[in-house]
Each structure stands twice: as structure tokens, then as C-alpha cells.
Length: 166
Image (cartoon, rainbow, N blue to C red; front, side, top):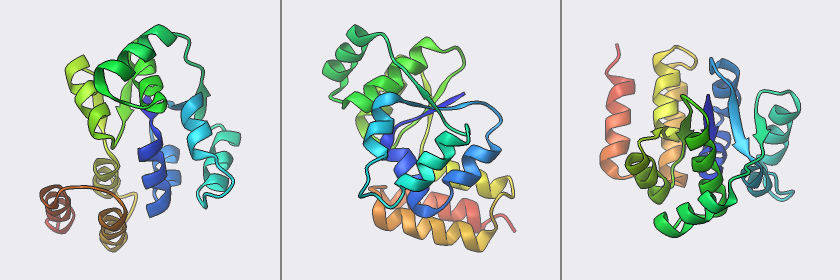
């Protein structure tokens, strides 16, 4: 099971790999209710895709009940409600992983010993699994570089992983 937060679902949608990812992920893909609210805004061009994946049951929306834990996570790690809901779900679901590109949520995941991934790691993994070809992967990486806040080292490492697989 993987739980997506708003930053990652938006990045995956913007670069064009969200549908490929959720269609090929072997487990259940979840988003908390608050994340759905954040990503299904009428003005966002990604909204129809995300709503369609929810309607087609490729992404499930989960209700978070432990609000005290959420508030504690928000205070302890300076994260927003969506990230706190995602972390709360991960803490309460066995073998759950979180997908986040939020620096503080990544820090929280490390400290709470929650497995995590990022949009760039998902992109590289999709390429490694032959879900996209090298040219598509490099174009998507370039888009990610232009819209996300990854360090130069992370971008270069991803590029090497994609280009070096001949």
C-alpha cells in the first residue's frame, strides 16, 4: 500500500506519469480526504485526471480518524494537514509507504521509521520497470526539474540512472 500526499500526486500528474504509476502499482493506492480536497480544485488542470482515477477506483480516498495524532505530527514536524493525514494513515496501516516530496514530511517519515518515496524515485522506478522508455523518462525528469524543488545532485543522480541503463 502507498499513501500519496498532495505534492507528490500533483507532481506525478503534471509530468504525465500518475496514471501509469497507479495502474501498475501492485498494492492499493490511497490518498487522505484532505489531500483529495487539496488536489481536486476546479482551477487545476490535473483535477479531471485525479478525479477520474478516484472514480475508477485506482486511487482510494481514506478517512483519518486519529485527529490528536495528526495535530501532534503537525506541531512536531511543521507540516500541513494533508501530510499529517498521510503520515497518520501510514502509522496505522501495516506495511504502508508514503509518497511525499515535502521536506518536513520526509524528515518525519525518517524519524518515525515510515518507508517513503518521492515523485522522482517513482519516475526512475517506472523507467527501470519498462513502463516508460528512456526518452519519455528524460522528458518527464526535465519537467520535474522545472516544477519541483529538487537539488541538482538528485536530478543528476536520476539522470544517470536513466541514461546509464544501456
